[in-house]
Length: 339
Image 1 (cartoon, one colour):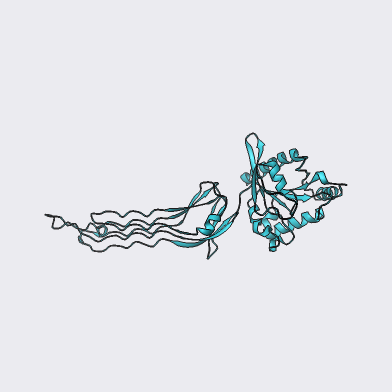
Image 2 (image 1 turned 180 degrees about the horizontal axis):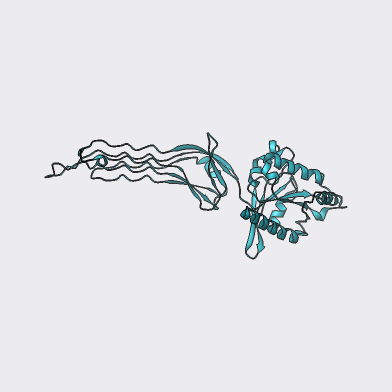
């Protein structure tokens, strides 16, 4: 099951208290203070890992507490530090304070580590307070409490290319054609119920990651259909492909479908409306008289939009599309590096 949000509670360990004690040995009448310090409390640490793909586990195991530091002891013995607790989450997880909605960290790299709740400091024992004028202090400190938070975790998948389209526009078929991803494919709406990622090989040891999200319909940004749950997953993509059904049985007018999709993304996030994109006419093998192809092509030429036609079933147009995507991604990365 794909879960991309969770609410959890974390509590770092409390610091151990210091100790007030004095050296007691035969023939040492003035042994002096020897109370040791308490140990520090354990931290709650989050680590991103590609081995984790969903927040499902955190839906049910949602309470994490690190160990408390141990108190100090006599003979200047330092208390043991509390053990840390490490929570593993998928790469792309955003951690927020549930109450304030402030972003604490965005884990975008495999192996990235963030300490979210810090353990309390151990208290000082009375040996720390000895001075030339106070050789027998009884003062000691208690440990400080560890931090605690209620957190909201939100997963946004990381991909180079995002596929956007109406239900049954051919997104799942395309990603299965280009990569080893095997999403469910059928001839009914909303076949895709969760985002899918696929790695597309370019050759020369180069590749890019493509994300397929559930189909959008008009009003998706307000909660209609399934799109609102998954639009956030294309917020991290560098390049978008709008897949438009150009078959003779297409249920939507191709130009109207494109304009609706563009409007939905821009309404959900204005930055998505500005993201580089290309238009892909799908199901070319079922074009019929080609009226939908011509209409969409004329629209793209008028607005100077990059336009491709493909058939995932016959692979027509695929060999031209993949290198184009690779070159556009290179251009986008070069632009980002320059800026």
